[in-house]
Image 1 (cartoon, rainbow, N blue to C red):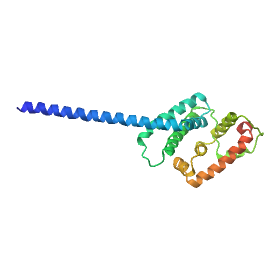
Image 2: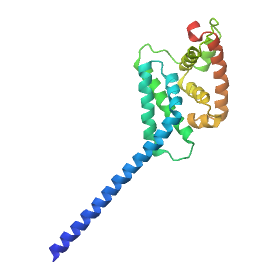
Image 3: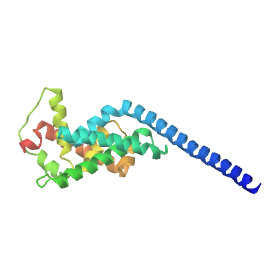
Image 4: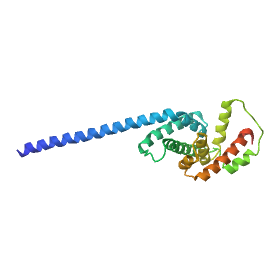
Length: 206
């Protein structure tokens, strides 16, 4: 009788354990599917913006593809931790900019003769020199703009790219950790530098 009771309890325990394990697996699958759906909506809506960001951070086409893929992977993984304390848009740009900045720093360290990033002060000096050069081709103009942004230090680049994607100062401050006042100051200074550099041929004409 005791053995029969023990066997019955073992069966019940195994059945309960199986149910719990299957329940956890089903919950995990449901969570992943939900996360996939959430990510797909984000990728559809912000895919072009993320591609522009990768372009502005990485000049090499092959490395740019790697960076963009890295951004998307990091974004998918991060959605599990998204708690709604900031907007989805702010969250996306925060993750993407962090990945892109790490990429740029990593690439710079791996190249012996990698060009140094320009601070705003240095960029203002560079912008005061060079020959005036204009381009009627919109694509060339956009490429030149990205090239100029790529010369800035990662924090300044981050502010400007977020601004170009129409994020407001409060959102940019949340992404970068700067105060709203500092964000506006940087935006005005960077815009002034970029406009002058653009019309003077960028760093190539320095």
